[in-house]
Image (cartoon, rainbow, N blue to C red; front, side, top):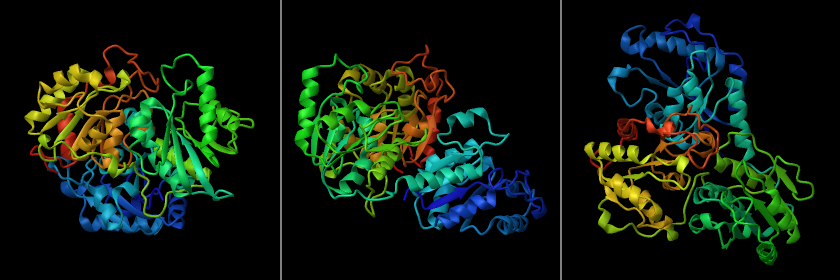
Length: 525
């Protein structure tokens, strides 16, 4: 199950927004609310209302009047399992007023679950931000008062409450197999040929296949091999570049393709599950798999596959990549076993001990670089962030690859320890796991943080959709201009001079984001 609870904002989401309403007679449900909520109840999902009510602090209505309004809401919409109310005003600086995550965490506790198993539906950016900061999913249902930039920043947008409920239930059902494989799977070949981050986000789906197969062989490319070595559920790895996937491919080598086909045939797989990103095609590899005489092939394909696929799966735009892959595994008959949460995870035996000379856990990792420069943090901004974090009392570790040493040295000079080029991916995973938070763009270390359950300050360039590629099921604060001209270009190099999507981020916003996670300047949480 992806979710076991749905949290709902009150005003503008469940009922029409009447400012500072203390009168039950003014309660008007939004169209279709009762039927939508009853669908959630019938599916076994628990429901809670999470609402800011600063009118209490301002004296516009009393607690008794508010409770009368809530009684009227339940009379019209049915019973809710919990009501969580923030009675404070913005100036009070509480931890419960959205966009702070306090109400989400409190609701999860009240419902006997965790924030990562909740989805919050609201009508403004504060609702979505509170969900993300807690590690929950957030759905924005815009109203006339919702600002365009809030809609652009939201990773999941629905036209109205019934549409939001329909998509919650669809996603929930999509990761549940309709039927198991017709025959037991002895050897499954799974494929994810792309970068380290792509391989990491496919991890839950690979674990699902592994739960239903005796042996799992993973085909990956050179750029994803280090991540493949970290994944649970993989028994063997075949490393081979695929020229229709790699962003800078060399000429197609017929001999290499013939060799790959022979290698795939030697696997003796009963089934192949080909995982791809939403803009990639699985069909070239599916042809090779047919030539390798693999009988059952599953993949996502919008293009007509002819006889190349036995299971042609389709996924709507906007689904997070881990769930997109899990839904394909489910279509192929596989699901995560009971007790295995649909989160990113690494093999414990594959992650080395963290170097002792880095001091105690509780530092902040700042990772400015990315293999795609369009998604990297501009060095001048990263330098100012390092300085701001240091002045706020945070210990900062600046990480990066061997080709990023000049940048990490420059950034660390403003405050922090320079680890550029000093770790491989497994070593970086060990460092990230003991961090209080990670400040990073849309790149592999964000997914390492998600796998370790470490909060992420996401400097997210909108070249790809945040809803698909943002840190998955981990507390997150997103910073940057989601309306920048690079939006949805999928550009590897910044197509706009000055990197405007990130260059205007204020370093103090990063410091404030850490406070949202309750990460203190003394290195604790």
